[in-house]
Image 1 (cartoon, rainbow, N blue to C red):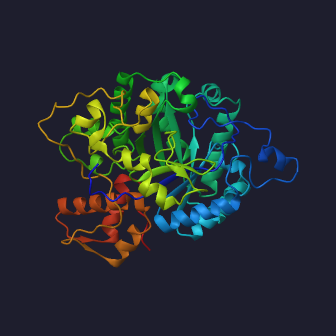
Image 2: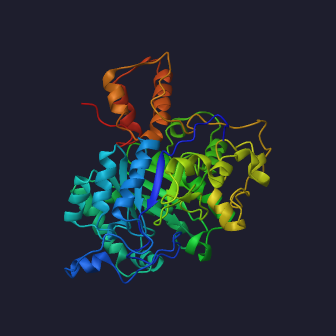
Image 3: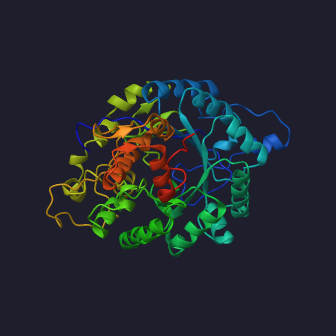
Length: 443
């Protein structure tokens, strides 16, 4: 990472509870199916407590939201778990965060979704949901997630969200048993109506440390299989590689020259841990990444701003030139950096090299390889480009964590067409090619 890069917490993954309805093999937070299950309590008509042992109370959550809104007023806030829908105050927390101007989404396994719940989520200001599906075969998904019927309930939940017009994405964790299902899973996500398909590469922390994961070569081959899939779904559904910073390098090696796919590949990018992404544990501990069980402080004891700016783990993890072995010397360091959580899971040191990478530095005659879609934020309009007021308004509806990247991509597209003025018509033209949810419709 560049020393001059402004470190802003643009994406915040907040595990608001460790309780869950499932017992997933790979759970990084080691979630549990506790006796105090609000879903069960609600069905029995009993009183539902507002917080459980180790979790921040509703009021403490409001205080965290206040601090986030002050430090990063345009952040994408992901309320997740465990299963966040087990917290009956999730609607209050989401509504409060939305009113503070944050872009709020919910990460759920999808098994609790009902029509009434979907409506309440929309009323709370939630912009979208993520659902977990790990196989096209119900029995295989259920086995991985630890509960029979999980697949059926999640698929039914997707149908409800589609009918209620609440956008959702499908997330799949890639592991040994579903390695041959990447293409089929993308097809399933699209058939369900997902706007985005995220393929997560397993991080060996939490229970994931005991799950059979891929070899480095299988990881490499899986990334290469994503490229034709991205092309096939352009304009229909976005496909992203997650926890796979090496995907930038794979794209470069496949096509070193600039391409439309690479320009708009929002899922590619270096490991963002501690630079523009971070996590909050159920008890208020802050970490550079939810998959990284190393903490900079607790929000009940220190402020969000203090931990983000000054804690040892956040300061150290940004020193990407000091990464160990291959990651530190690699010409792709500025655009990749390896997965810091995976390095920790494999070695106990989050600054070590990412052992899942097969690349040997020095293959290319470059000091560094950089990409035009490296993280930048805000509108960042180039001086020689003219944006109409309507086009600016449309861009303002895009989450801040990708707005700068999309802005540059739009301008590049315009320049290649010999156009200097960015209008709603041009945005619509691009929108039709790269996906319906990248650009908001202009009125």
